[in-house]
Structures are given as C-alpha cells and as structure tokens.
Image (tube, rainbow, N blue to C red):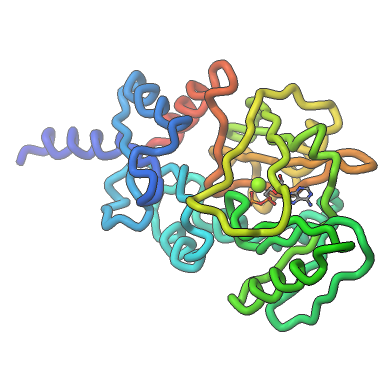
Length: 297
Ligand SMILES: Nc1ncnc2c1ncn2[C@@H]1O[C@H](COP(=O)(O)OP(=O)(O)O)[C@@H](O)[C@H]1O
Ligand SMILES: [Mg+2]
C-alpha cells in the first residue's frame, strides 16, 4: 500500500460520523434522519450505529449520541461504553454526570431554581406528607418511563407502592409537587448548539395519573415550536454557566423548564440523548451538521 493511499483512507475514516442509537431504532429517530443527507452535502459520510453494537468506534471521526433511549435500565454499561469511545459528543464524562438527575442538586447548590425535589435513596423511609398532587420518578430515567402522578387525597397508597417498587430495584427516587401550570402553559425546552441558542419548543403535559408502565421507549409527546420568554432564556443562560464544563464544548444542550409560581424552574438538563426537535426550526439541521463538521479531526 502506498503512503498516499493509506493517507486517503485515514482521511475518509476521519470524515465518517456515527449517529448513535439503540437496537429498537436502527434507522434513527425520524427527526435526526435529515442529518445524514445534511452531512453528505458537506462531504461527510454518516451512519446509524447502536451503542451496544460490536462496532469499531475508533473508525469514526465523531460519534454523536442520539436515540440511545434504552440506557436507563443499563446505565452503568452505558456510561462505561460512553467513557470508552475516543471521540464522542457529548463526551463520556459529561454523560456520566448527566444520566443521574442528582446533578439537579448540584445546580440548585449553585443557585439555579429547580423543581422542588425530595430525594429518597433505596434505604430511606418515605411517607406521603400533606395533600396535593405529587410526581414520583427515578433519578435515572428517560422518556417518562417509571414516572407517575398521584393525588395524595385518594392515591397515597399507590404513591407509596411506586416509591417502594423503585427502592426495591435499588433506584434513587425523586418526589416533586405536580406543577399544574404545565397543564396549560406546557413545558419549555431550550435547544443550544455549541453553547449558542438555536430554538425552543413547547411540550404538552405528559402525566395523567399513576405509573401503569409504558409500552416502548418513551411516552408520545405533543411538540410545537415556541418563542421562549425573556425569563426562560435568562434561566437557560444561568444553567449553561453552572454546567461542569464550558457550554461551548458541548455539541448540544437541552434545558427543560416548567412554569412555577415565581417563574420558570429547571425540570432537567439533557446533555445525553435529548430529542432536539430539529424539524421544528428553520436551519436547525444545518446548524447541527455544521457543528459536527467543525468537530471532525
Ligand atoms: N414535577 C412535575 N410537575 C409536572 N409535570 C411533571 C413533573 N415532573 C415530571 N413531569 C412530567 O413528566 C414528564 C417526564 O418527566 P421528566 O422529569 O422530564 O423525566 P424524563 O427524563 O423521563 O423526561 C415531563 O415532561 C412532564 O410532563
Ligand atoms: Mg423530560
């Protein structure tokens, strides 16, 4: 093999991108699929690869985590995989931090308003306090799986059973007030590419009652474009500033906000495998494709 030839195959390898998905979505989420022709137009070959496939990750100039929505039950395996991939967006260390929502405590410690949360560890005693509606969910979760809403006036026993079930599975449990303004105002997701604001969406309320199990990877969502308020954008910037790495180092960031009495609060920060809702905003696929190309070696 001539030196020239090996160099050109190295260049081709560097220009290949893996979009990382799960076995149940071998062709990616439809919202991500246009990224492949967008990269092709930029001279870059991209293909879907499942995170738990027997793949040679060093063959890619960049692996971009997308629809790995089956990781919640295998988080340790997923984090071990993420930290082993040489060029991953977002990086493995960030994924280790972001796949357990106890990161919300850290953000709260830095003054970021979050949904008020009681943290219940597997060995802790927990009993419902006053009335009202609460949400029970695991600290490691995605797609609203294992998440339930309970009216303590009539469903306290069901809430206790849900908490106990998660504890028995060794999971940290989050208990929150149900922020009912989501029923009318919805949830706001702010999307950033390379740390710069790109677009936003409104997500309709998702929880109707107790957790009865979800068929599949996620609960269906009602998504529409949204123009965020100045308060929401300002909170988004505070979240970015409180992250453990510079926001500009991250290919994508999604900050999810719920409306509360004194303004928006953070429900989660998605740095791992968020739906990016690229199809809801003009130019969003192109912005992400350009950011991917900038990261190639
Ligand atoms: N405290 C809450 N108040 C109102 N709705 C909530 C609350 N917590 C969760 N939800 C609803 O449940 C959905 C899933 O919860 P979330 O914390 O985003 O977990 P996941 O990581 O599964 O997306 C949210 O999009 C929202 O509709
Ligand atoms: Mg969510």
